Image (tube, rainbow, N blue to C red; front, side):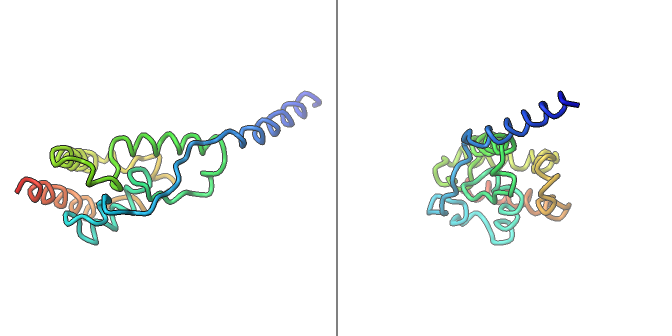
Length: 152
């Protein structure tokens, strides 16, 4: 019984101690002229869908959940957000060349159509980010039309 108490106290002290290790979660930045929000390629309904299902991992406009302040989940989130933004950052859309934008739009189509995005692990907690068949179709149509517009 004494060993169990020592283990529990040790785990509690460890949990408190790891809270002082920085997570690396980036600060949100306001949208600026580089954001897809200001692009002629995106309509308001598509923008709302991107905000709901994509922006938390692929923009500088993250809705941080309550557990983002607690280690070790904050470390996982920081890594996840960093990886997502390294692949695509809608807040820096205008920094991409037209060739990169077309490639990203193709990736969006592939990932959404295959059901790989949004990630299943993300959808466990963010059920509102789940895409129904109409939303998937709208995003696929948008990505195709945006590609055609860039190629003009």
